[in-house]
Image (cartoon, rainbow, N blue to C red):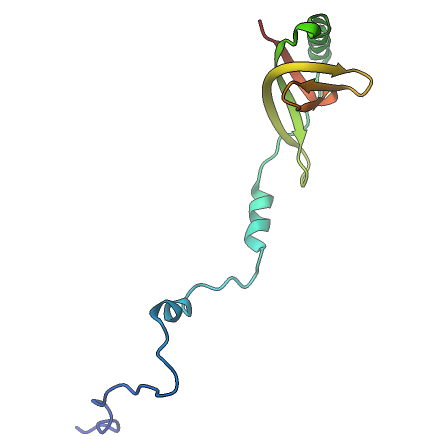
Length: 135
C-alpha cells in the first residue's frame, strides 16, 4: 500500500549550506531539566536545617563555671590551655549550635566579658556553657 511520503522517505537528511551543524554537547543541553523556581531549593534546604535551642544554665552549672573562671584568673600568667564549649547563635534562624574549642588563653577581658586565646579567637563569656582547664 503506497503512503503519502513514499517519495521523500528514503532521501538523505538535508544539510544547511549557511549554518554549520550544532555540536552534540549543545544539542544535549536542550533536553536538560529546567529549574523554574530559581533559589527555591536553597530555601527548602535552609528550612530543613536544624538548630538547637539556646541553653539556660542552671544554678549548679553557673557556680561550676564561676569556679573554673576563678581558677583561670589565678593561672592566667602561665597562659593555660582551656577547652571551651560555647553556644553560637544562628544568623538566619532561632537557636544555634554548640561549638567546642581548645587553645591557650592570652587574656581575660572581664569588663567586656571576652576571653582571648593566643591564636586571636575572641570568646564571649556570656556564650560559654562549659570551661575546662588543661593540666
